[in-house]
Image (cartoon, rainbow, N blue to C red; front, side):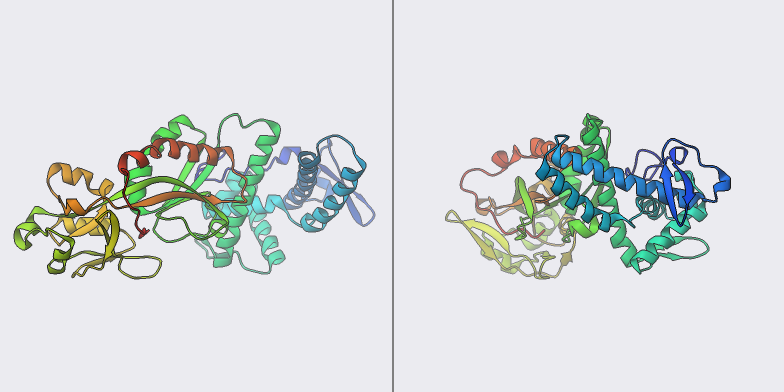
Length: 409
């Protein structure tokens, strides 16, 4: 998670512009703020209070910007009335929301230190600590576990951090778009993908993507588990099948061909199966489905149809399909996996493809993102880039007549 202002910081965690803070003047019990004047130390407003005043003003400016984007600059009685209603609702929702405190909280969470976050933001550690304390008081939960040496997020703090980071990034995108500053994609992109697809398909392309879009920083999460876009702050995910969730958009990247393989050492010891039925006499390496904990059946083509078989063996793996390929490579048994994982081994002869007449099955890989989320230019650019680089493989790798099988990922 890299940023643009300080190493390791979030793009949205910008250094507070303390030199542009408004002055505070006392008039009875309330405090009024006036732009364009200088705040004097003898006015009794400390650093964090000035930050809070700045953030309240920033919230008002955000409401004004949002109103202009929703309704434009043309005056109209209905629009004016509607805008007044929205402004009143937003006033109730955001009146006590201190955006600067949230930025400092995110910076502290990212850098795992109040002191380092304070240095990055140009404020004191006490200011960061008081900002976090105010958020904790407002939310009624602890965001950090504090020790003398370090801080770490609580479970509630982690969930709050992911939501806040997403919101701050979206505000930054909206500001760049509204002001026309984002002429090229920029910001942080978080993407989750299965381990084998990441290693063999996506990660080798990232250098080219960043050469094309140097303003985008990419954070990858390699895992076969399902992720929650909202709670974990991901922009995109790649999975081996489209989920039933109607709130997600799925774009196919490719149909990845499956092959059955074994090492020459294993075949010299156990013999080579000639038909899928012969696998009953072989040690078939199992892969456990993350979704239900069951061993995945192996699909084969018979008479133009895909038929699934349950196999047995003394080796099993879960979480990472690369483990099965490693076992097969070292003589443990027979394994069915994606061709792109073992292409080099097949070419070099360290593995041999089996049951070729019964091959031809494949599984899809799809790119997922939330249906309702505004796609920033960096997300759109990455989606288009992957489709450009991988989409052509669908026709090349899946000839007419091949059937698609259930994905283990």
